[in-house]
Length: 87
Image 1 (cartoon, rainbow, N blue to C red):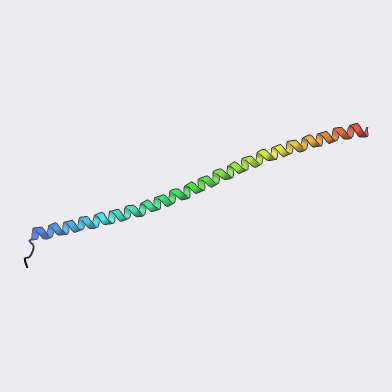
Image 2 (cartoon, one colour; image 1 turned 120 degrees about the vertical axis):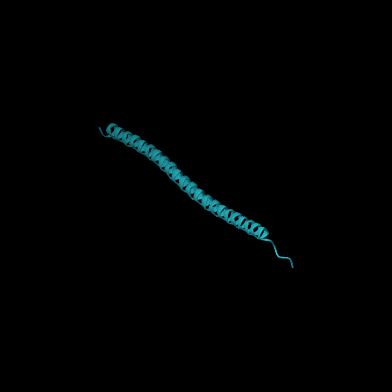
């Protein structure tokens, strides 16, 4: 069996080192990509939840004002009716 020259041995070691480096970098890229997607998903969900809560709160406030106005009109109408009937 023929032995490899020193130049070939260095070339093979450099090639394996490059392959190992590429594999590590690719793995890290996939890992951090997944982490980034998870973070974006959590932040999007949180933002959507906050916006939904604000929308529901605003709608509830509008409906509360509407009910208050309705009750005030009914109350004012009843007082006027009582004045007419009782006096």
